[in-house]
Image (tube, rainbow, N blue to C red; front, side):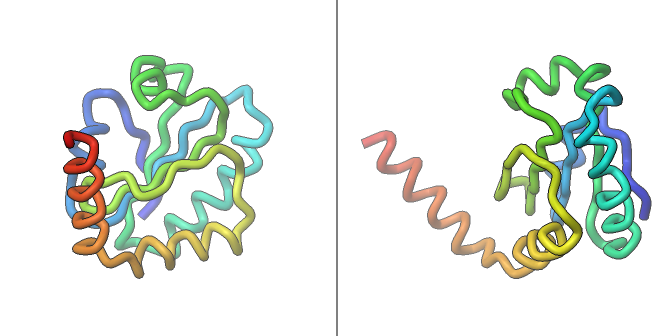
Length: 124
């Protein structure tokens, strides 16, 4: 599966689906973004069970603002609708592979439990 261009219209539905979604926030004028693009594209071809989406921060300024993107490229990972990773900077292939494996290995029941505990303590 090749990368999918995400827009404000389809972003929420895409990240909200079950499974793993990697999102690359980028811009055409950004050198590191252009350098990271082939690595991201290759990973999308090697892992067809994962959604790899790209958000052009110039075309989707509202979406970039909502996610407080201040540095690009920024890579976010969602699993079962929950953001589990967000970090600016281009990753080399080996690090991206490690991140993919880490997303696969997550115990989502444990992640949900930790989120519930945080929410409960924030309310208290």
